Image (tube, rainbow, N blue to C red; front, side, top):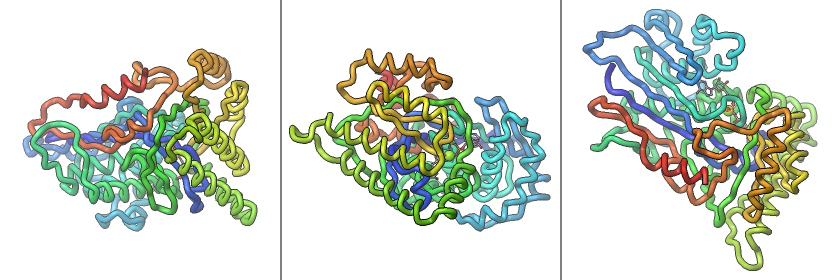
Length: 420
Ligand SMILES: Nc1ncnc2c1ncn2[C@@H]1O[C@H](COP(=O)(O)OP(=O)(O)O)[C@@H](O)[C@H]1O
Ligand SMILES: C[C@@](O)(CCOP(=O)(O)O)CC(=O)O
Ligand SMILES: [Mg+2]
């Protein structure tokens, strides 16, 4: 195999505005420390053309492969610019996914495999490669695994086809320049369309550009917090599918256009208020505690409107009731219908209370989020100033002499900080 290129991209949380953002409202999202990594290796001349395109999902111990001959039989030669039409011409790729006989229990992966075939064909053409995917993110839980997958895959494919420059003397992580990031983001959005049907673009945008953003109708504004925010992320472990949830909200909006327009407009105001509060400096008059109370209140209001949209779930309600016993309001994050719930942990909240909440949540049907690299505690205290670090953004790594990759120090450092 030739020189591999690795790209990694982070998952996200949505502090306010999921679903409504698909209908033009403002939303606020932040990237998190959990990433998906994609490595693309091309056959070298010495290997001879291996004649295979291979996708290895390492965490799931699944390997999919297609002969180049079969791909040429089925797939049309398509446009190589990121547009809907270039991926629409690839509908025939569906049969190539069916032929892989994905086990029923993992059928949700079919959408990801389909997006892989579409993006690979559109960006690199019908050529052999070995693509290896690993991820820290739970799939289908509202933390944006689909976007992190599409962003890291698009970046690795673009870099391996020369559309992103790897002009670097040293081995290590590399941040693409802003034009390259735009290109990655556009392709990733096309990939998200394959997985979600009608994405707003917020997930791929925050995964590509990192940090905390306000997003509306395709436009992003970076936002900065004056104070750290700590969030508890609870995974209800109830599986769901974002595409179906997004479609359900659109159907409700068609049935009740007036009522739903008001709901979306209220969410828009909540997101704008939230971003103003996050960005406002804490002074004596407007203390951190007051700011946190407002953020909690706005998140609670947003949750009420998500219930109106029909995307809450009994498991989410259980988490809400449990945290509320400790005066901690929560909201779902991402598509809802199960998945993850966010709870703001105020700065002055005693550690003993956090432990009690976690113990009580663990006793509920769902279980607390787990698997943050082992080193990380069950709750994720994310500090906004950390978002300025490049490890929250999409990065590329490659090795000119094909030597083994090493984890960049900055990530290890961050992981330790987050656990403290
Ligand atoms: N690492 C991955 N490998 C393959 N497919 C993935 C990966 N991550 C996400 N996907 C695809 O995205 C789907 C989950 O996306 P979605 O329902 O939007 O939830 P979320 O984005 O919140 O995790 C998976 O079922 C799968 O099809
Ligand atoms: C529901 C939505 O607002 C966010 C979906 O996030 P996730 O795929 O559930 O992580 C959809 C979108 O904005 O594309
Ligand atoms: Mg998704």
